[in-house]
Length: 312
Image (cartoon, rainbow, N blue to C red):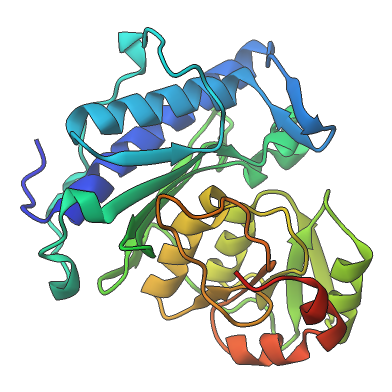
């Protein structure tokens, strides 16, 4: 049982353990080779058995432990189904339990909280072989009164152990007002403007916006969680996506970690996204995320692009 008396910290603590369990499920399914791929809305919008099984694990594990907790997941699954008990994770994170709850979160009630889950962010990369597996993440975001305040990013395919022939995996977590943990930020851009963007959902608007930023280099990678992780680690200057397509479950957890270290994620207009339970799932105004100098990138978005993308 979690020892922290703060509800948000207990939820984050449980989410760390649950994300690791979901990551194990994702790895196991990948190793067996039968992915159970189906197309949801098109060839770049896929769902696999790993997506489905990992979401069942996350949703069931959290709602059993926190009665009344609202959890919104990416995948459409049957409302009434028998959950395999082997999918349930009951552990907590000792590291999170020992952390001090930020003053602003001490009085949060269950009805204030909404959890946003992407059980397998980077599904397309997951199906394409070992080259892109490090793009895959498990995302669990904690929103309070519509604002992202806590999050977990688990990278199930982080580092391959040549001795055991298994992936090590890693888990990063953060709480606004406390900080973010499990990674090291080190500016690796060497003074260059290096941007990251989508590798599978490129549009003319995306290309026009990137060109307006005058980048020295553009990294096209999969998964919103992975892109924000590149920002968090200092491997890129910013994440730019001037298009619709990203959803709340893609950005809630990464945004919480970014905010926890002083960074910022908004739409192309500079407006923050809301994460209330009844909000539209689509991030209609695109994404601009930066560790520092966020305003610089907002100012560089062409007005023609801002006129097309609605502000939520």
